[in-house]
Amino acid sequence: ALGMATPTAILVGTGKGAENGILIKSGEALERAKKINTIIFDKTGTLTKGKPEVTDIVTLGKTSERDVLFYSALAEKGSEHPLAEAILNKAKEKKISVPHAGKFRAISGKGVSASYRNKNILLGNRALMNAERIRITDEIESSLASLENRGKTAMLVAVNRKIAGIIAVADTLKDEAVDVVEKLGKMNIDVIMITGDNERTARAVASNLGIDNVLAAVLPGKKSAEIKKLQRSGKVVAMVGDGINDAPALAQADIGIAIGSGTDVALETGQIVLIKNNLNDVINAIKLSKYTMRKIKQNLFWAFIYNVAGIPVAAGILYPYSGLLLSPIIAAGAMAFSSIFVVGNSALMKRYKMEQSQLRRHHI
Ligand code: ADP
Ligand code: MG
Image (tube, rainbow, N blue to C red):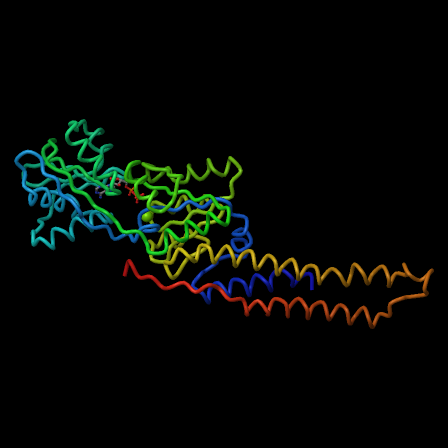
């Protein structure tokens, strides 16, 4: 019975998860989920739908709106970033044909660069322009800030090293995100949002979600270092993410939770995968973990109690007072019964009802 107490409960627990679209890859992950006291959510694609759309185009000098979109689309043609997709969709919508650019280069966490005819095009954030020593005037800075304060990701477009415009993109929050953040708060779990996006945009998005803790402008390689920092301060951290750049953080966290619609690398790295892409399942996974651990404790209790009570009696502890000894037949019966109890108690876990979360298909 002792030997079966843990594995039978874990087996039924992970099965219960799978039935509800929560893939738990190991018993350890199921056991550890209960101890989580901090959850870090990636912004794009995890808290948001990951389908950003172009919302504003700001022109500077003589450049037309169409030109800003044309150059941006040109530069993004070789990129797989969600921001690139948004810009290319907008160009398509406006029936702008986008030729192939030369010398395409993606600059991780900053933007892209490309060339077309005799023009050099740069598209990205302030960090990119600073690295290229392209001047951002006060006027440009204030347009950027006003877009960012509204939760938009604003990108600068420079043609031949002169800023020609701003293109802004916004992503919608997942329907359940606000609710999940609030529920986690009530469970005394700290919620943190992490993103490569700039501080202002990140703060604006986080405030719509009721999240106070924001780690912004984190370069793709640095997400896992932020997790390590939290772990050193004694936190038990879960990371929820979807992107390639989240994979090292998913691996570093005490538990990595991958969104089912995410990239293959994230799915491979996460110890828990949420097939339904629904953030409510983060809570369901924690509750399932707590429930399973409770069952394991019950099982261990019933596996032990017969021995704790039976062995001393069988050894004659009561014999001097009452002449009581245990017959080996009773011992054998108790042993069998404790095994039956443990297996039966684990089997009863099948009755556990999980809150049903809806399947979400954002990325398909
Ligand atoms: P996230 O953590 O939100 O997935 P990334 O680390 O991929 O963000 O990117 C951080 C920032 O770098 C973006 O908000 C954007 O300003 C800039 N950036 C990255 N890739 C691109 C791109 N292909 N085009 C324009 N800007 C980009
Ligand atoms: Mg992401």
